[in-house]
Length: 193
Image 1: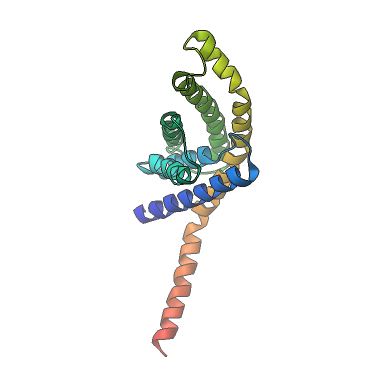
Image 2: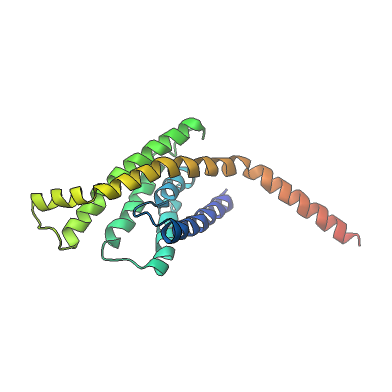
């Protein structure tokens, strides 16, 4: 099972990096991101160290290309915490359509958390807003368009990626056995030549 989790984590990181690169480079909608989806999936389906390893690896690898700013303290830790949100769903007895709805709900909660947490970080660190209640409220108001995009994106992307992950998770043994049968047949054939 450990090897399966490692393979799943590597696949999540690979598709997360590719997806983030494609979204930022070609779609170019600010705050439309897939890391929430992969954080929740890693937490809910893999658990353990993968709860943090998957989202932080995606961010670290893509930030090599995109760069980052002082706010990375808040964004990186936010996605780690979002992985913990996914971990809350790990205790489910089966992964079914109800699980997809629960993950989507957790995606909406994650959007709100990300907005509140990172805008607070922006208010504290950016030096743009005065460090007063009015400055904090102004910072949150200015972040509302980003919240809208993030929330709408997560309401679409979280169920899409969760459903995809469930399909792979469910049919992985079938793919694995087919691959092994092909390999065994090929190996037997070659050994008699």
